[in-house]
Image (tube, rainbow, N blue to C red; front, top):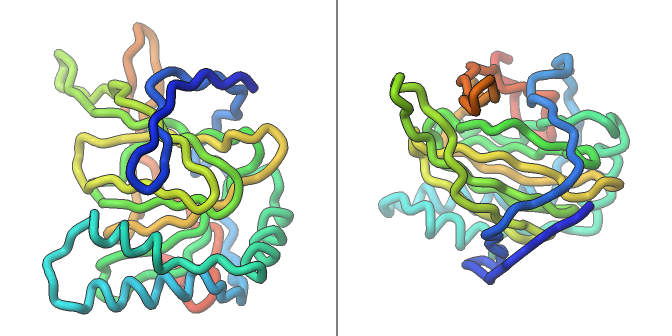
Length: 240
């Protein structure tokens, strides 16, 4: 892997990359694999701390602020050695598959929580989040996050325009606002080891759009159903 970086330290310690990231990655769509309806009785310290923080944050009567929620979540999360061992076992279940595990679906629909397991070298397509805000935190490994602005072309079709790249290492996180004009692409930077990330979204992310490259340098938006591989702890699967 070759990495050419001009980096500066941003808020939360994430390093903003203003140049290109050159790496061998496996291009796979999140819905490419068969859906596995597993229920794993794993109640992690990290997901328990997120639930407690989000309950207090959303229930304090103050106006919602993504910046405030993001900053507080970084301080509230506790990722214990027990969690690391449990998630290592989760990585070993399907070492070559990108999997998404639901750990919380808040009863009023204000947020959902997911744990994602990234195989070595895995990269998502460019995709949006159906207008939901989101927070993404690396628990194990390192992730690159390429941000794009969706700009209408002469046909009125949204086209991704590269904005910049954020490099996230263990314990670091990034957040994005719930706007229709935002998309990103994420990649596990390691060619040998899996990565594990924690996600909080401002609602239930059931469908989103992948942006597939076609001839002429254009992209076509492809509606995609969000795959859930199973539950961690007391959360319920979508449709259950």
